[in-house]
Amino acid sequence: MTMKIIEPSELIINPDGSVFHLHLLPQQLTDRIILVGDPGRVDLVASFFDTRDWTVQSREFKTVGGTLRGTPVMCLSHGIGPDNIDIVITELDALANINFNTRTVNPTHRTLEMVRIGTSGALQPDLPLGTPVIACKSIGFDGVLNYYAGRNEVSDLEYEAALCAHTDWNPLWAKPYVVDADPELVSLIGRDDMVHGNTISAVGFYGPQGREVRLPLANPMLNSRIESFRHLGNRITNYEMESAPLQGLGKLMGHKAMTVCSIIANRMNHNSTPNYRTAITDLIQTVLDRFIP
Image 1 (spheres, rainbow, N blue to C red):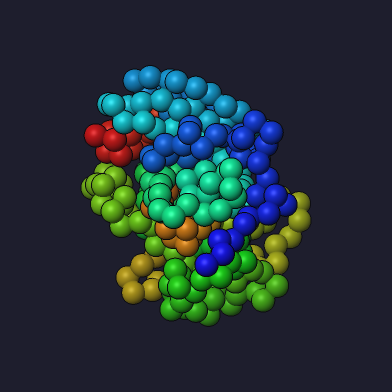
Image 2: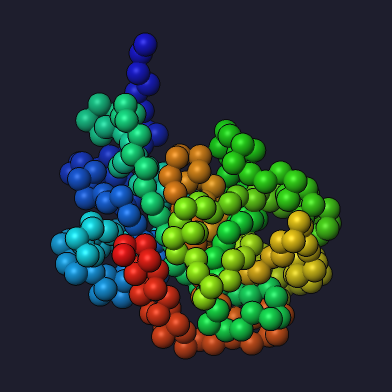
């Protein structure tokens, strides 16, 4: 059987042997990965490592590799939005499962464990600022997963249909997809001090999350309909912009992924806090203690 060769136009490898956007070498990849949006937050995560062995940065993608309690670990910033997640997860998977010399898929699959730590806006009035919320189900309003074969096999189609009906979903928008977080990671990291929620990944920060600044919204009632939605006991808890493509692409590629976010704004109560560093620092330490005990 002839092995598929991945053409240079499909997966760009830099002259130094690193993958195109992340500038990481295959030998730098660790099995356990912390993902954050802000490049400035990478150093905060790495401050908890026992060793910091190397740093690589290209554009918004900054990575620090080291060890924690004897386990190799890396923290990588993905920037803002679902399109960046498509880049990051595809290139991490390539580092894990493609031979860069032959441009063929490795015969043995390597599974990565990825935990994203972020910030989020609550969509339920009873979620106070500072609450950590796990995206047990993530709802992609971004459309990224719809471009890949196998999308329906990893998605909760009944949930999708119920949500579209309840919100009177605009056909001009990308069809939502709903993907579960990896249950083993949720069991490992999620305790009674975290809300197990359903999280929307929006395609933008302002209009796509129902914020009205100068431009009017196509559906001003969308957030209130989202807040009132219920499906099999599930309610939608919060907005962010990356968990759905992370969990969806992770599932399609055979990796384990989840997201936990600290609530820094409540959209229903119209309050927010720009001073969330303490809450994020505490969340980072908690996740690391449970992810790498």
